[in-house]
Image (cartoon, rainbow, N blue to C red):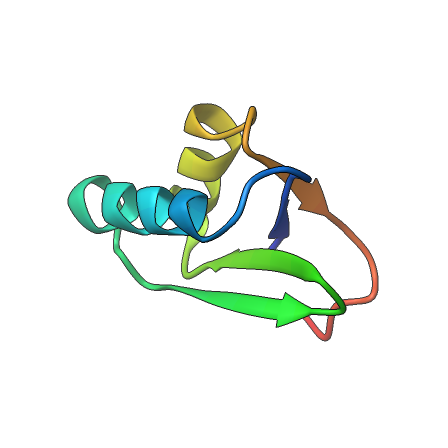
Length: 69
């Protein structure tokens, strides 16, 4: 499963917007990670991953590599 970094200039309000959308239109199972000044959103399943890729591409960017997945 891919994780997504919240783009620079966006913060907690963006995370809340994404979380609300996922709860309404996806599984709602996701978690947020804060690490070294960055915010990451981890989708809980493939449909939520697709929502992040399609609906929130202007707010988040996919991060590959370095995962335990």
